[in-house]
Amino acid sequence: MLRFAEIGLFLSPFALFLIWRFLSPRVKPAALWTAMALILALAALSVRYGLQQRLDTSERYVPARIEGGRIIDGHGTP
Image 1 (tube, one colour):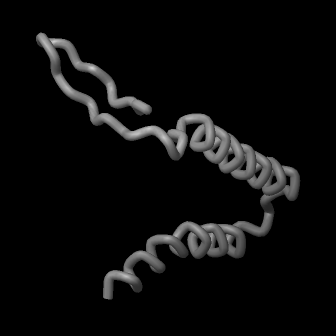
Image 2: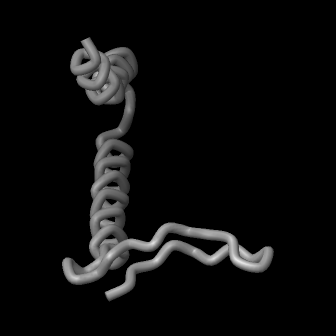
């Protein structure tokens, strides 16, 4: 049952876009191309950020902790 909920949540933005597109045929094609370009740019930047922030396979993640009243961020150690 959980799989159907995940699939439904994934497909809902696409369904809402199609409904919006069919109910509003006066939308200029330039607006659609701009929206698609922005979505692709956001996806590319998300992938780039994820690749920059990943740890090497030789590193071990140390979770965030509190030492002496200060928060020490999570980080990787060799």
